[in-house]
Length: 553
Image 1 (cartoon, rainbow, N blue to C red):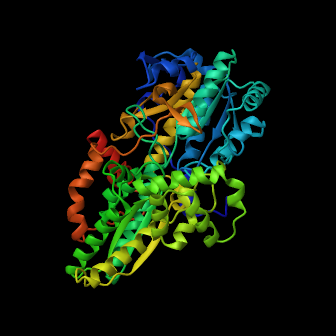
Image 2: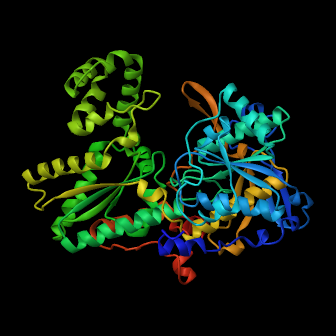
Image 3: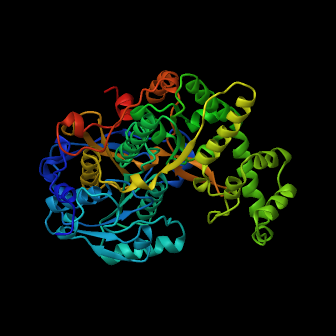
């Protein structure tokens, strides 16, 4: 304990705030049910697949009687998928709830994600272990992983582990894929008459696991505040030197929630929203022209500097690049052996001339060579292009530089353009959780305990009214099947939790769209600074601007 920072020592001592309904003894916290739930679509298929767990009612915890909450329990916890700030507090909230219900209850942590459940690789989590991780970032208390429990053998092994440990429940902390897995596991256990219940907790910094019942996934608050600090630092720097454009790629493969929130916090000159690009069918040339126009108009004002924010998954939303990626995936899958024998970019480009359509080949050749090579390397386990490894920020910076050169030759641009590129991603995944995430995650973990103690399975821990102070939050659970739909995955229709994309008719995007024209030309930066942990609530406990706008706070 001696070799820790002063901040870490202070964070150990922080006492997370709970909703008022969870502050009593567990035996005095009753579960109240609403009406039956249903999925937005594909109801018949989902009802057939989830015969035991579909259509359950939403649950809310209120003051009352819950004698079962004092039962001695054995619970396992899995951290699944990418890290997100606050995961340790989910585990701490779950542990404290179990011990508050019955001091003899036990918590087992499965090591390195779902694989730990399959392989019975676990460690019992004691008070001493938990105390060493309270209010800290990362998932290193037990590790994480991306294994999916879907084969008969994996499910059978999970059942064997649950029976070996006498588990009353497994709590799975993860994103949409991990919680889809939780729903399938809950259904299997219920259908097989196994007593082990399954409860999920919503995690992802991308912010794409949300609904009316899940107002925000944990980690989004801390990650966006961490990125916004870095963006604000760049803004301050470029406004000081007045000579650089910074192109910043931000995490968000499927949704642009992170880019949108960071734009609202920092007021950059350009922020691309993938969902808008797709809705408007904006080509790469269109995007580049729009950015170049902003650069040129700012140069007319003597301001040859600026900041542009770019979502990680943008290229998959640009029509011609989306087609290119689809054709590349098909071609490399059909002729995998032949493609793998090719050596060097020129050989691969020649091979593509025979295996791509003329439009897609033209798109590929329009991409700078160093970036184009990334479309052909490091394919994922399914043989697909690894979009997250494409330097979209460099692609745009190079393309804008080329466009400005054309404009200068035509007399339409007289400024100076010098670009730097950045990718802010991993910097935010394991940051010290903000007070909001520390409180929210602890509440999610404690709520997961109450769901288990109330005998529920197939539920996702839900804490709502998050734009209000923590004591006014409401705690409960939503059936996982209510968040699901059917999607085609690897050629088959499968049940999955639907990703929540940026709503172009939603209040956060509308607020951004109303202001971006002014931000484009006027240097109106906001500098959020580092995440604050100590001081007045209006400085330390505020949620994201996205959440405030969505909830009318």
